[in-house]
Image (cartoon, rainbow, N blue to C red):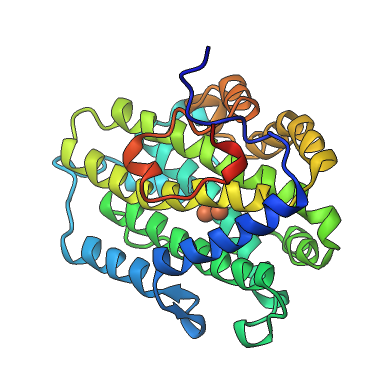
Length: 297
Ligand SMILES: [Fe+2]
Ligand SMILES: [Fe+2]
């Protein structure tokens, strides 16, 4: 007996299925993001949506009481996290998560072939994927602006960490595909938990709560598609390895962001990652996203 529409993201697949799914993803991604603006690392449909948000801003009913607390702790935590209010912790935590994403894609953009130099469909998919990730950083930036934080700077990591991120995309596919998939899964897990946190932290700010959810949905819909797409790069041995990697990966990554322990249930995030199967994704997101055929019942 099953009422579930979808199967585990860790379900097996054949090489032929994965080939067909790359074709299907390519069809999806072209209409999803619209025209690719490589110079600007942007996509027309996404740019238009961001402009809509920028041209129709919403503001906090009660401005942040202590924006200095944000600016003092957003790049590095200097205060004791427990001394900060939940709203500040949430905003510095969002920045720190997005900053990792930004550093990772900056490194990858420079070493992946430009669209004109792509030799296969996987390369083209990856190029568009990276442009979408740059759009996410802009959407995160817009979340912070919505909360009145207009002076956020996107600061590089320490030189050795930046180097590490730059080296990563140069590894052979066999080595990067599994962690790249787990990273996308971690993103989706985090965004679902963040969505729920908005209800808690922004209970008295319904306009901003709804706007942050709209901004986050734009990101999450892409990330759900990325999870399936990155899963499609890997075979049946690596998919087992990636399930084992969920716990150490999430633990390592989130322990580096001090806000997470104060705002989120890491154990539940790990469990959600290991059990991920698209069934908890709301229909309005499914309708705009993409799921591999072998994850459908
Ligand atoms: Fe992203
Ligand atoms: Fe992604």
